[in-house]
Length: 159
Image 1 (cartoon, rainbow, N blue to C red):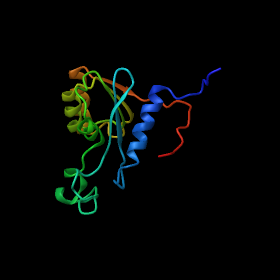
Image 2: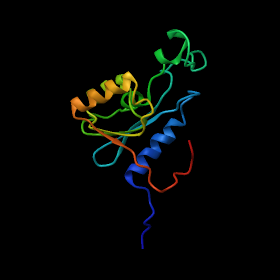
Image 3: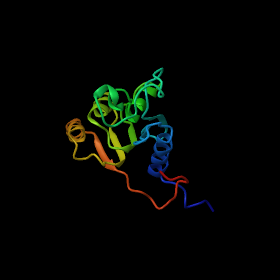
């Protein structure tokens, strides 16, 4: 008789996003993303970090200070990295699992890439202008937004 306590697809893909987040060197916020095809194949993953060839030892990780003294002008977000890491044809109709609800900049890339659904674990910045804007764009573009509901299975690591 087969096992019945295996991970659901949502648990599996959010687990991949959470594991990807562990690659981030950001000391305050680690975010991961996993893009999945309509037939549940992983297309790409990403995490928040400095762009390729930009040393994460030389660029700032600070949250406070002038624009050029903080991470915000430099860090590439997990969702955008997952889109840019994709080496296939089209992301049309795919889903993106992300540990943090996308900002307005990632929302534009998600919409333009053809992703049709976002499954997010946390929306801790829901009241920020950035997330209000991304939510409005997703609704207008017909992108489904689904809050991830934690299953009762332990993935094997804690964040």
